[in-house]
Length: 245
Image (cartoon, rainbow, N blue to C red):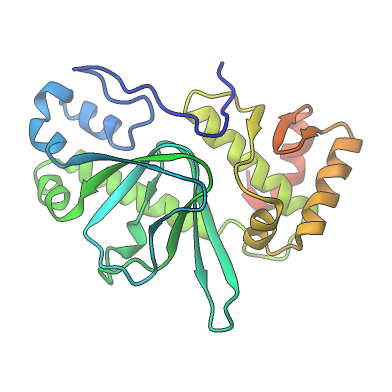
C-alpha cells in the first residue's frame, strides 16, 4: 500500500474509469454512468493547478460559482478575525471537496490555501446542480459531502484533553488516507504544528509535547512531519471520546 507523501496524487483512471479518489464516481457509477457516458458532466470539469505551497486558491468573500475536488496535495481552509488572527477550519486531502460552504451565501466563507503542491478538479456548480436534478445519486452525494463538511467542523467541539484531540485528529487522517488507497499507518503531515494547534485549539508547543509523549509511549513514531502509527488500538482508545466510536 502506498504511503501518502507531500503532493500525493490520485490515479487518473482512463477513458472509462474515474480517478481513484473522484468525489463523485460512486454516485455516477451507481446510476450506470461511466466516463464515456458522462460527456455532459465532464464538460464541466476543469483540471487546475499546480498551486504552490502558500498560494491562495480562493479568498473569503470571493464570488462563488464552483466547487473543487482535491486531486493532489493538501488544502487548508481558514478565516481571519477582526484582530487579524487566523482561525483554521480544516484540512482537505485528495478526493475531498472544498467550497461547499459557499453554496447558500454565494460567496466563499473562508480562505483556501495550498499547503504543498495542489492540483484540483473544478466543477461549475450551477451546471452541476442542473445535472443533479436528473441524477438523484449525484444529488445525494452532494448532500453527503455537505454532511461530512459539517461533521469535520464539529469534530473538536466539546471539553476534551490535548491528548484526546490530537489522537482524534490523527485517527481521522489515518481513516481518510486509508479510504483513498494510501497507507493508514504511515503518512506525512503537510500542515505545520502551528496549524494543527490552531485547528485543535491548542498551542503549537502543546502539539509537539503530545506528539513526543505518544512517541515515548510507543504509540507513534514521529520523524519531522512523517508519522507512523505503531499501536492503533491505543491511539483509537484515546480518540474514542472525541470521535464517539
